[in-house]
Length: 557
Image 1 (cartoon, rainbow, N blue to C red):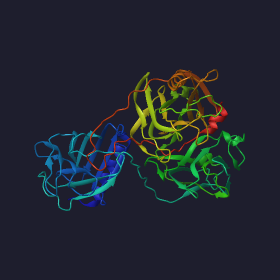
Image 2 (cartoon, rainbow, N blue to C red):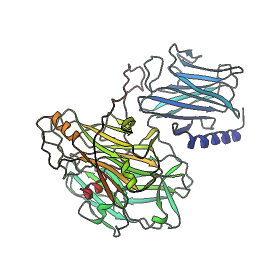
Image 3 (cartoon, rainbow, N blue to C red):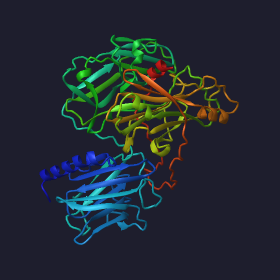
Image 4 (tube, one colour):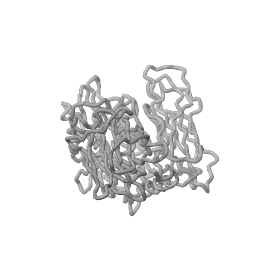
């Protein structure tokens, strides 16, 4: 066996080399505490294909297995290596602590197998959802990866060269490497929460002691929740240069701070700490050290509790080590403004709403427009929301879904990374579709701020950052009248001309008229549920880091 020091060098070199050159495998973990086994992976969508690259510090056979626990029994296993004359690779399943059996249905596809610098590198793919009883379904729940390897090409007992690690392959969050524990704090100051169901409080503030000569990169967003039963979401916006005065009072009262809508960080109910990938960061400080920021907190108080006070907020962990890319957040979807005449009928089992973004608008702000590399998506509706789909179009044809969540849960709004990097080119279109159910409602549902109103938004985290914050639309309902049936109302609102808006960080907006393109059917696989982790679902919700960019909504209309 090779010593640990050269191994670390080899793994480190491999990791750095593939980090920039292979956007289809954005996730990486060492499966063992001694950094002997490296795994990278990526996927197209939670119902498609997942690709793995396993790198082990050996010139013998290597194996990777999937199970609901650390035991070998019941594991779905793939093993391979580079032999003296040819490579070998097969799909196995384990019935006990003995040599696994060859699976009659080979569900894994070998992409490459090589030995280099004393390491075996095995790249392969498989469907995420399989219909073979000997295969393990990969879902949005954590599973256990087991690994083993040998020093020769004779597959036999591995001895101590084995281990296991629990990971969530579809909802994985890459952990950043940090060398300090510096953070900025944005919190409320013991504010009084009124006795009303929905209340938004805003604090315009400046971060103190930022060095104007030193740029900072935020790599982690940590919630500080004092009243978990009241705080629904928290959102930090960057203000345009004309906002000069701090204040601390209710939101959307006609103050100049209402123009702060460049999303920097956020948290929403059901979410936790959000950590960015290793090579990206949210820029703050430096030449923008005098910029003001708006902390917005949505308090949801359905029982109208009186006498409550709150000091919740966000802790922004930053590093002075310059990241390779600045992160931007682009808001897409339907403009949710209460003044918009857009009524979702009551008693509707399903009602679809659409928002459109045509990135050709971006050329009116900058030229050329770089390709945007989207690595995470945050989706948001309110209580009636059941599904969200985000379609990606190029040259008028849908090429993929940027995101899917067909089991949307208002109380569980997480931030998750995409399975691979999605590239948005100048001129591409994005359509956000939200499906609502108002079966339990007696009155129409409007678009707006309240928890009982609705929204339809998708927030795209991407790099490199550009100075465009928002690309949304709404149907031209200025002369419309509600239709008699649910189906007629949905169809009418969908096919009205879409008024599209794009805005930059300085609050400048441009617009045009567009239409809603048809979305393809959601990919679907139906299998028997044969392992404990098999819950066929799609959880693409992203920490609602931008639950509401209402500032734009209010100012633009």
